[in-house]
Image (cartoon, rainbow, N blue to C red; front, side, top):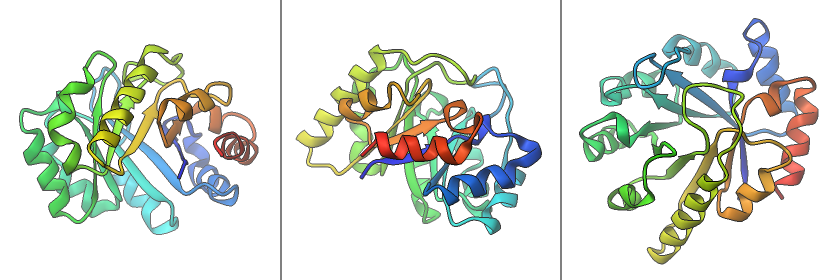
Length: 216
């Protein structure tokens, strides 16, 4: 099943609740939440209080993407404040397996992520242990970048590897996804699509509807 996961990094925070309701009303089921620490990536975004504010007010699946150093420090806190899936970068920790196990121990779904410069082979030891792999299609840390086309080749490589291993793996792409290239991402093998400004700019409901139609 193909899933749209709109990134609230591009939302209007003055009207965040209304923006999220517009996603729900248009048939969205996921919400992507980018947590940045200013260290692993240059930008700083938001953390637990925002998720705590969102959680009681929506049934959307909260897809939390940790772009922070040593994510294992905060796994339990993000699980407790309402994340449904905790996704972390394998480049950000020296204990990938331990972090996966820690997330799993909270009862949440587990995701791992790689940046554009990290090879798919680095994921292979962990594929049986996770629910989702996120392939970044831009350098993490800033919204509004253009998709790096070569990253879709990594999606195809990962999907092939998952099929060879008999894994029903969600493959997510994040960065520069628009209505014009989303089909290419799906054809490459992705089934979870993160879109930020392409969803939250102008008519949110109409944008969500267009994405969902294009992704079928």
